[in-house]
Length: 153
Image 1: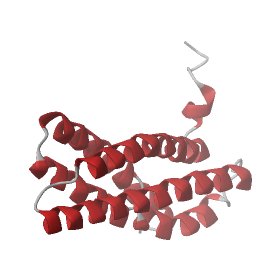
Image 2: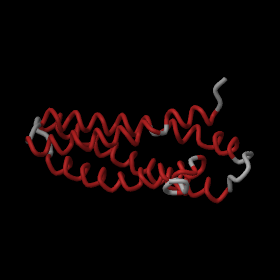
Image 3: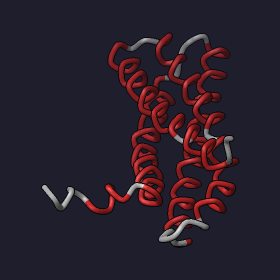
């Protein structure tokens, strides 16, 4: 039977991996100066912002479950939650920027390249937040992240 921790582990990768794909498409759109790819990138940023709601909704339940496990401190969970929220709000900002860019492109019949560049810059910064949220989440139940190499090697 699935619980909040299972759901959280399933859905928390969607925004992280999705942002990576959107970032690559954004770079390609700017290099090729393609309005179609730029629009696709904006749709990806919007979709990622929507998908980012799921890890937020499942995070508290997952935290309550893992708090009962031995060796799991509330401080580690709180740190992960903080980075997760920073990442989430950044994704919302980038999703809104994507929505504004699509609206302006429809209104002016041309894609505003400046907004595409702003989305790219925000996405690059968000990759750091994604990394911090992912690493702090991994530290909760993945000791190999904290331990480094296996001492028996």
